Image (cartoon, rainbow over all chains, first blue to last red):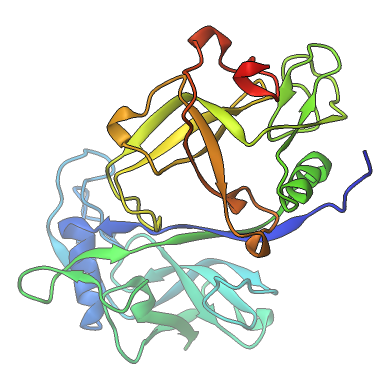
Length: 146
Length: 177
């Protein structure tokens, strides 16, 4: 038996999920569509963004929404030198944990910056909105350094 | 995601999102499967025989799962087969162009000892049964590629059923052999 040429082929496997958002994340996304960012008040008074349905300590149901600021502070970040196809930018950018004004926990989002050296822990950033918000996390296109 | 989110009755409140995940990869067939696909492009089903237990595998994997030894001997198989098991699919599967109800079966080609999965058609679904004799219906030769769907489906043969204990044990010459 002769050795064959080894065959190969490109494949794409798609899992076309539709996810139900529930009342809490649904409210968060609905507010994004209106260019508002809301968190939720936990049992110990902390404001959690994005909001969660149940208290992380007591597991009690949460429901007190709190609007938070559109500016915040970088708590930590990772600079992406070579963005991948699925990334929100086709040029270098940062993933960052951003603690929005009025929130007590940071939220992950992307930060547009010219260079890694421009980004720092403690730097102030401002949300940049998509032209047509539609109720998705990408309604916040990115954060920019203030 | 699509441009339209799922929204509630007020046409405003977000109730759902599209969150697809796409896995893109490059499948490399390897030597055994490449050889199998090269032969099926020529309209021939082939397997590989284990040098130790003599089982014939289709599609060949290049080794025997039972004995753990390489399989190098290529065996030409018939395009006649026996139904080892089957299921009737009644629920549409997203992305699958075949309209239900349709029959998916594990079929053991004559000369092989294990089954391959394929479609059964040109049959009364209610009368499909284990041990039934079937034969491949091939696409026109000009459409053959490196793929098992060179065979459109299998259709029933007017031959006596194979007793359950002989399924997977027929020679290439079939029941008569």
